Amino acid sequence: MEIDLCFVMDCTSSMGGHIKGAKNAIERVVEYMANMKPTVIVRVGFCGYRDHCDGPNRLQIFDFTNSCDDFKDYLSGISATGGGDAPEDVLGGLNAAVNSITWRNPTRVLLHICDCPPHGRRFTGLLDDYPDGDPNGLTAEQVLREMRSAGIYYFFGKITEYTETMTEEFQSIVGEYPVFDIKGTPDPEGLVEKFFDAACSAINTAITLRESH
Image (tube, rainbow, N blue to C red; front, side, top):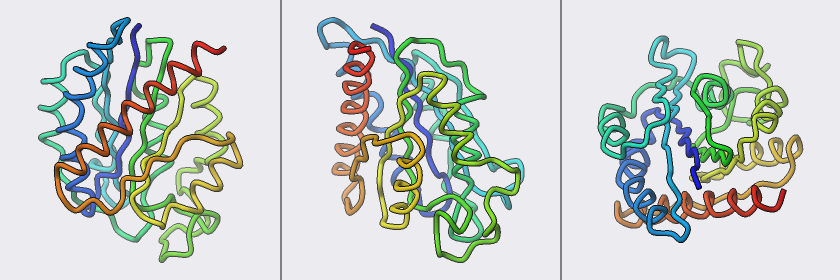
């Protein structure tokens, strides 16, 4: 069985440790899946996002690869910088992950990890430069329904309580989906372990859902 696994991550200043955790966990994930019976081959991709004030650095996209080394090399060049107000360009990042990378395998997993919500009053009461929502006109309904139409299973890694309303709004659009608790992990090894557990659980859940349809 072959699976596409895309990490979508907030890459603003507060996310440095989590980007490192993803890099260190992915090799373990691929090795774990390769040892499953039957073997599961994982292609990994990455879509990092920041905020609208970050210009050409707003999105950083790495298309799917079978090479752990290439993936880790790419992530080693990702720095946690930028971000203006509290909300980030969540919808832009998810939209890019759905439409700007090459999904190919029938089982498609998107693991989204962030510590802040999208722009707009419906998602947050935090200080927001775009309280009316995404300045490019993206809506959660549009992005999430395109994701669903593309056969991509969405999973979320929760780091802070600031994303609670986002989760409620997203689930009101596409229904329940798994939320993994990644918050409150001060040591690097513990963070890697949480990433590993979340990614493996997401993959196994997606396989089960795919086989049941």
